[in-house]
Length: 51
Length: 142
Image (tube, rainbow over the protein chains, first blue to last red):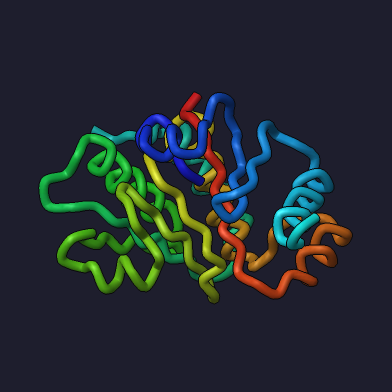
């Protein structure tokens, strides 16, 4: 968990406009409180190369 | 002046008594000249740790205890590492205030149980991952 207001440079870096924002390995982000399955999907997608 | 009110303290004490089954360490990182958020986080961690014999606060100096900070992968402060029997990699950066206070309390409970509470399908899918993954969840104190 990262408190966005206290770390504005990170909020800026990852372009946090709405919370919660989940950043996966610096590259992928998922905005909002999505269902568990959607997060898993994003996670696996972020990890699978070239897809 | 305490940050957690008496009523909330009683509530958390009860929740901990019911749900915290094994020791949890709250490793908190601050610095000598504490920023406002650092001071607040430290106080909060100390107050939370006082609510259960199984929850312990350890306060470190981000600058002079750098090797310890590095061992937890802590790169900014205020930081809290919630560590149980294992280090599950759970970190909280910033003051866990407002609704996020609940996040901290739930984090302590999950770590103590060694159980994420995720569904079976999720666990199965995540178990197939073989490389370390960095997840950062940005939140605001509402």
